[in-house]
Length: 173
Image 1: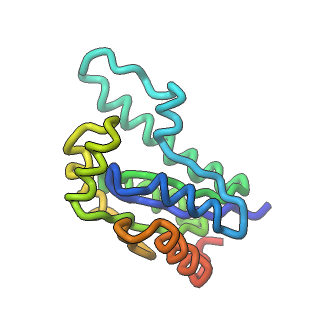
Image 2: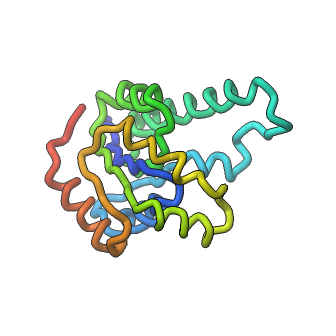
Protein backbone atom coordinates (compact mmCIF):
# COMPACT_ATOMS: atom_id res chain seq x y z
CA UNK A 1 0.00 0.00 0.00
CA UNK A 2 1.27 3.44 -0.86
CA UNK A 3 1.38 5.97 1.93
CA UNK A 4 -0.67 9.13 1.73
CA UNK A 5 0.84 12.57 1.34
CA UNK A 6 0.55 15.49 3.74
CA UNK A 7 0.21 19.21 3.16
CA UNK A 8 0.74 20.99 6.49
CA UNK A 9 -0.78 24.48 6.85
CA UNK A 10 0.87 26.08 9.87
CA UNK A 11 0.15 29.56 11.14
CA UNK A 12 -1.36 31.61 13.89
CA UNK A 13 -4.96 31.63 14.93
CA UNK A 14 -7.02 33.63 12.40
CA UNK A 15 -4.32 33.42 9.70
CA UNK A 16 -6.72 31.85 7.19
CA UNK A 17 -5.66 28.20 7.37
CA UNK A 18 -9.22 26.78 7.33
CA UNK A 19 -10.20 28.95 4.37
CA UNK A 20 -7.08 27.84 2.50
CA UNK A 21 -7.69 24.18 3.31
CA UNK A 22 -11.19 24.36 1.83
CA UNK A 23 -9.90 26.12 -1.29
CA UNK A 24 -7.13 23.55 -1.72
CA UNK A 25 -9.56 20.65 -1.52
CA UNK A 26 -11.54 22.25 -4.35
CA UNK A 27 -8.60 22.68 -6.73
CA UNK A 28 -6.23 19.78 -5.98
CA UNK A 29 -6.62 17.14 -8.68
CA UNK A 30 -6.57 14.32 -6.10
CA UNK A 31 -8.95 13.99 -3.15
CA UNK A 32 -7.43 15.13 0.14
CA UNK A 33 -8.88 14.70 3.63
CA UNK A 34 -8.98 17.81 5.81
CA UNK A 35 -7.71 17.27 9.33
CA UNK A 36 -7.35 19.69 12.24
CA UNK A 37 -7.17 19.42 16.02
CA UNK A 38 -10.15 21.81 16.22
CA UNK A 39 -12.30 19.14 14.56
CA UNK A 40 -11.57 16.79 17.45
CA UNK A 41 -12.13 19.54 20.02
CA UNK A 42 -15.38 20.66 18.38
CA UNK A 43 -16.60 17.07 18.45
CA UNK A 44 -16.05 16.96 22.21
CA UNK A 45 -12.90 14.85 22.11
CA UNK A 46 -10.76 17.02 24.41
CA UNK A 47 -11.00 16.71 28.17
CA UNK A 48 -13.43 19.24 29.65
CA UNK A 49 -11.75 22.10 31.50
CA UNK A 50 -13.11 22.05 35.04
CA UNK A 51 -11.06 24.84 36.50
CA UNK A 52 -7.40 25.27 35.76
CA UNK A 53 -5.91 22.52 37.85
CA UNK A 54 -2.32 21.36 37.55
CA UNK A 55 -3.13 18.41 35.31
CA UNK A 56 -4.43 20.48 32.36
CA UNK A 57 -0.99 20.99 30.79
CA UNK A 58 -0.38 17.25 30.88
CA UNK A 59 -3.81 16.56 29.37
CA UNK A 60 -3.15 19.11 26.61
CA UNK A 61 0.24 17.56 25.85
CA UNK A 62 -1.33 14.08 25.70
CA UNK A 63 -4.03 15.36 23.36
CA UNK A 64 -1.50 16.84 20.94
CA UNK A 65 0.78 13.81 21.20
CA UNK A 66 -2.18 11.71 20.07
CA UNK A 67 -3.09 14.20 17.35
CA UNK A 68 0.46 14.10 15.96
CA UNK A 69 0.49 10.30 16.04
CA UNK A 70 -2.87 10.20 14.26
CA UNK A 71 -1.59 12.40 11.41
CA UNK A 72 1.13 9.87 10.65
CA UNK A 73 -1.28 6.94 11.10
CA UNK A 74 -3.84 8.35 8.67
CA UNK A 75 -1.13 9.01 6.07
CA UNK A 76 0.42 5.57 6.61
CA UNK A 77 -3.01 4.08 5.89
CA UNK A 78 -2.92 5.74 2.46
CA UNK A 79 -4.90 8.93 3.13
CA UNK A 80 -3.77 12.18 1.51
CA UNK A 81 -4.15 14.92 4.13
CA UNK A 82 -4.35 18.66 4.43
CA UNK A 83 -3.43 19.24 8.06
CA UNK A 84 -4.20 22.56 9.72
CA UNK A 85 -2.08 23.23 12.77
CA UNK A 86 -0.57 25.80 15.09
CA UNK A 87 2.78 24.33 16.12
CA UNK A 88 3.06 25.87 19.59
CA UNK A 89 6.41 24.49 20.69
CA UNK A 90 9.72 23.42 19.17
CA UNK A 91 9.14 19.94 20.59
CA UNK A 92 5.91 19.71 18.56
CA UNK A 93 7.73 20.68 15.36
CA UNK A 94 10.44 18.11 16.07
CA UNK A 95 7.86 15.44 16.89
CA UNK A 96 5.92 16.07 13.67
CA UNK A 97 9.08 16.04 11.55
CA UNK A 98 10.22 12.76 13.14
CA UNK A 99 6.82 11.07 12.85
CA UNK A 100 6.40 12.08 9.20
CA UNK A 101 10.03 11.82 7.98
CA UNK A 102 9.19 8.68 6.00
CA UNK A 103 6.14 10.34 4.42
CA UNK A 104 5.80 12.81 1.56
CA UNK A 105 5.04 16.00 3.45
CA UNK A 106 4.95 19.62 2.33
CA UNK A 107 4.99 22.47 4.85
CA UNK A 108 3.25 25.79 4.17
CA UNK A 109 3.72 28.77 6.45
CA UNK A 110 0.47 30.77 6.50
CA UNK A 111 1.08 34.44 7.34
CA UNK A 112 -0.94 37.63 7.71
CA UNK A 113 0.01 41.00 9.20
CA UNK A 114 -0.78 41.34 12.89
CA UNK A 115 -3.34 44.09 12.19
CA UNK A 116 -5.25 41.70 9.90
CA UNK A 117 -5.01 38.87 12.43
CA UNK A 118 -6.39 41.05 15.21
CA UNK A 119 -9.17 42.39 12.98
CA UNK A 120 -10.15 38.81 12.09
CA UNK A 121 -10.16 37.84 15.78
CA UNK A 122 -12.61 40.65 16.53
CA UNK A 123 -14.80 39.87 13.51
CA UNK A 124 -15.01 36.15 14.27
CA UNK A 125 -16.11 36.65 17.84
CA UNK A 126 -15.09 33.09 18.79
CA UNK A 127 -11.42 33.82 19.46
CA UNK A 128 -9.60 35.08 22.50
CA UNK A 129 -8.25 38.50 21.61
CA UNK A 130 -4.46 38.28 21.57
CA UNK A 131 -4.37 34.60 20.63
CA UNK A 132 -3.00 35.32 17.14
CA UNK A 133 -0.25 37.56 18.50
CA UNK A 134 0.69 34.85 21.03
CA UNK A 135 0.87 32.23 18.26
CA UNK A 136 3.23 34.26 16.03
CA UNK A 137 6.01 32.19 17.62
CA UNK A 138 4.81 29.19 15.59
CA UNK A 139 6.85 30.35 12.61
CA UNK A 140 10.05 30.20 14.68
CA UNK A 141 9.67 26.45 15.07
CA UNK A 142 9.03 25.35 11.49
CA UNK A 143 10.94 25.15 8.23
CA UNK A 144 8.68 25.69 5.25
CA UNK A 145 8.61 24.53 1.65
CA UNK A 146 6.47 27.56 0.86
CA UNK A 147 5.26 30.64 2.71
CA UNK A 148 2.09 32.52 1.78
CA UNK A 149 0.38 35.74 2.83
CA UNK A 150 -3.40 35.59 3.19
CA UNK A 151 -3.81 39.29 2.38
CA UNK A 152 -3.78 38.02 -1.21
CA UNK A 153 -7.00 36.56 -2.64
CA UNK A 154 -7.64 33.02 -1.43
CA UNK A 155 -7.84 31.56 -4.95
CA UNK A 156 -4.43 33.02 -5.82
CA UNK A 157 -2.82 31.77 -2.61
CA UNK A 158 -4.31 28.29 -3.05
CA UNK A 159 -3.12 28.27 -6.67
CA UNK A 160 0.43 29.09 -5.57
CA UNK A 161 0.33 26.26 -3.04
CA UNK A 162 -0.90 23.76 -5.63
CA UNK A 163 1.73 24.89 -8.15
CA UNK A 164 4.51 24.52 -5.58
CA UNK A 165 3.06 21.16 -4.47
CA UNK A 166 3.14 19.85 -8.04
CA UNK A 167 6.72 21.07 -8.57
CA UNK A 168 8.08 19.66 -5.31
CA UNK A 169 10.45 16.76 -5.08
CA UNK A 170 8.40 14.11 -3.25
CA UNK A 171 10.06 13.05 -0.02
CA UNK A 172 9.92 10.08 2.25
CA UNK A 173 8.41 7.53 -0.10
